[in-house]
Image (cartoon, rainbow, N blue to C red):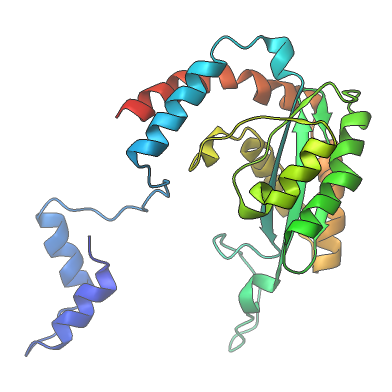
Length: 249
């Protein structure tokens, strides 16, 4: 797979450089079409085996057990989405631009079938100490807010800050039950659906700066309906057979 710009650059070395439209026409005549590449994790046989075992081990989990899982993750939200088209009114000769999309904030959040937990803005570089502080001040309180008390299972991915020895010791000291998590499995985390809902809601509010963006993120996160959280949890039933299939491909 070669990008169109690379094909055009290579043609410059020829006596008669090719135009983009000429290259497009030649590619289409050859039966090739431009598509946006899907981002998929690279799975080794070890990853596939781990995903398969994970799916098998949770196929018979009761809904009651799943209702007691706290799903967590981090996400980035851009002030002005560079991938979105923004229609504006402007005077002739003026070209307004937004440098680097206006800035980005990183958030940590969690949810269970009972609703969303606390939303935290991560300032500066994330490290083990900052992550444990987030868990101590927000994850445990989210469990209480969601009336799970200590009778819950905590989910986190395999980020180095999450799997660090000091973090694992902290989790054991708190006597927390942690859901095992296979590597290279972002598609298994149900919170991704809620992140999408949140980003769509925030985009509709059109925040103008990072402070306003953070405030709107908190407001919209609290507005996410509980039935959406419960629905995400029940979707695991339909996801596991898919994981079984992917792990054997």
